[in-house]
Length: 613
Image 1 (tube, one colour):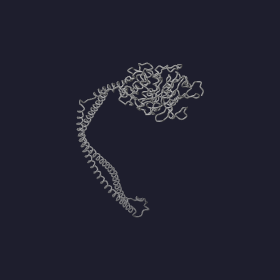
Image 2 (spheres, helix red, strand yellow; image 1 turned 180 degrees about the horizontal axis):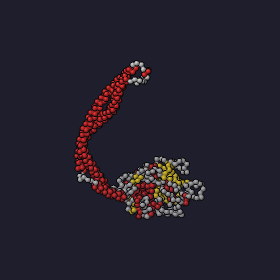
Image 3 (cartoon, one colour; image 1 turned 60 degrees about the vertical axis):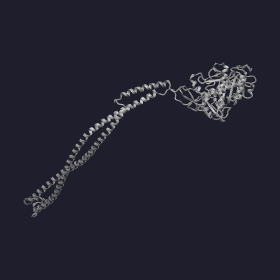
Image 4 (cartoon, helix red, strand yellow; image 1 turned 180 degrees about the vertical axis):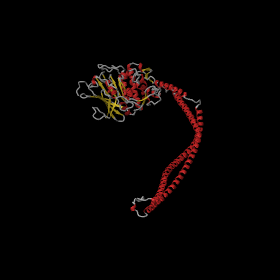
């Protein structure tokens, strides 16, 4: 994994000189009088790495933005830029010491969000190669992704937390955070993230589960009441099997009769169609006969009239005198035999017309006889069709009588089958409800409480040994036998809990904890930011007027050995903020900033208000 190294912290303003410190990749010591901005440097570093706020001091008035340079193990250099009071942090490539003029590589929110990468926490974790590592959130087993702030609180220790009675493992006094804070320490010591495990049901989930069981019981009672057949599922399935066989036979028999009936119906339709054609043809023949009979009567009337005309003409030709009845000639114009000639001509005309009408009459009589023959044949066909249809009706009646009981039996069988199937469906529903109830009632016991203190004993022993060696190197009085209780997260030295020690000793033990964790994890390739910032680890307070080196709360040898160990045994990058003056040997081997002490060139982190630039 990559580790981070702090390069510089720079405050910028228009019209004011920059306020800056440059950090050594090894040891940086910032010491001097109180109220000179030392702790403000630590707070500003924390602010640039995602802290929510930076409390203002009079000296920062007029400064608008802060730059924090970072160097990554893979060789990259980054600069974080954040305006005072801003919720966003801009990231630039390279080591910037002035107001950025190029576009930001990324603009990030300061607040961590597990589902978004647009925040400084996810960005830095990704740079380090550990984004997404899981830690335990609570005793129910819920896991959440690691937050860079979880690492920052172990690496950046302000003066209040340094001497606090609370364990260095725990970052707050809120009990609900203990599981998570212990899990972070477990991740750093063992390198193993928390697995995703079944979570224990909450009280609400338990109440919901009980409510589900009550509802299932109610549904079971209602379903059982709907059962109407006193038989179990096996008996019902046997009955249904037998019923299906009977139903198949009944259906086959009914189908055969229905097929016969369909054939009869089809023949009946054919007969009805043929009889309809016969009746239509008979009707047409009858209409022709009626018309031809009228024509026959006309022909016969015409023949009678012709005969009468012929006879009348003969009589008139012989006996009538005067005007000719045939041509209208007066007697004086008539020649001898005139009437006889006219009579003969009339007789010839009548004879010709009679012959013609007689021929037509004979043809008509022949056609009438033929039509009457057709009518008789059609009548016979109709009678035959009627007889066949009556037989067909009788056959259909017989088939309907055969089909009626079969249909009745089939309907009863189908109704019985539906009832059995409904009963089986109710039994299946009861089984499902009982299985669901069993799964809720006989649910596996809640998983054991997830413990963030389940750190392998070998890792605890390893850390205890490294911390004991650190205290021994600092020559803290005593045997310096360190023990860590993973249940309470309490550290004890020589059997005495840290919280029971004095303020100065609590600070030294906390400093040894932070340094040892960085040193151990760097050596073993485990997770760690790569830097440690310690505010007042070996001296709690020093007044500006107290410039004597011996005016310190701990023995001078402990202070001297503290710095020597940090120089000789690498713990990565360590930044120490103290009131007390470090030994002279440190000043030659570390980056040292002295604020408001004899011989110092700086009154504090910020230039004096009246300084020109």
